[in-house]
Image (cartoon, rainbow, N blue to C red; front, side, top):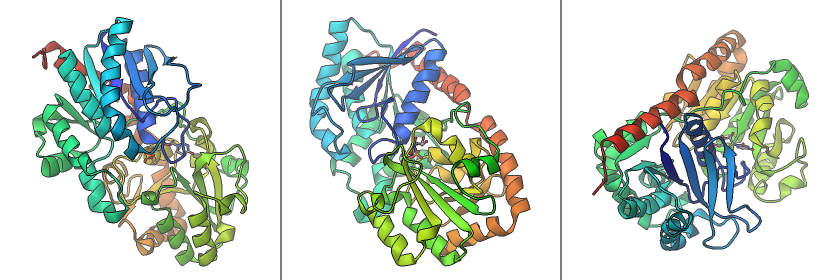
Length: 418
Ligand code: UDP
């Protein structure tokens, strides 16, 4: 296979630092998938909007994969919602660049709905097949978040258009396939369910007690790890309220995420500023200051010790299209308690690697934490199962191979040559 693929990931630069409000799972997915496709012999150009004028306009990062920065809109990170106003310019910049550089693509793969709008334009312009991964669905986000959802009104219509025009949709879990059918009337024959993968080299189990020591927790604490953005919909408040209900000072929580920080732990004065402030206020109100530690955002190659140190990793999201942190935690040998939503419902197998609870319910989460705390032998078994389960189900090498087969089918069948 030696095809040239263009990834359209307008706000998901594969090389962006993670943990802050704007960069998360999509950036990781795009980087890992393109790198693994590159290792299979494909050439992948990822088109992302620039976020600084100091970034190289084109930057290779692994065999066969590079990011091309689109110089449209201000050279800084902007709110996702504002990107819509630059889509037309982005959609015309890419083909102009492609002609100037003499590039040819066999297929386009777009990520997130507004990149999908650009993808539809490129499919029509270049006459090549279009594959799309949604990463998040407007209809479900609205249904689960209500007024907390700030997506523009055009989102649903663009998502419908993508469902009609894309030659294939990669859904990352069976629930997403069902949602696409139900809310967007997408043709199920066009949907292939393939999960996100995990980097099994970066995420490996380290000895638990040494990891606890390394991140300055004592052996006898029951350590809960949370990793992710500090977005409201991630449900950190549910976790804090659950900890308060448990009223047990041996339970400690480490929260990894937020703007990048090199400090091992943030001080209370750091926490008086956004994005930490609302959490710090709640922690104060609940009287659990001694049990909660924030580290700020950390690069992915530093996360292994937080997951490995955990007695359990908690993913308390209100809404979670896939939830990479759950499989990263399991890859490091941690059991997982996650809310029963989206992709977490199928990735966190109950009684094998973890437990599920009703989203937004501190009471139900507290019950689960109590069980894990009081039954160490049961938790130890889940922890033992976690890594082999992830190796079997979420290897990027295997998933990228499946996605390459989807490309092959579309390219060889000459789909979209009209
Ligand atoms: N992440 C990170 N450093 C942090 C916090 C998060 O590298 O401080 C990464 C984490 O490893 C995961 C991604 O950000 O790969 C978050 O993806 P997920 O699917 O869990 O959530 P999203 O951000 O897409 O909502």
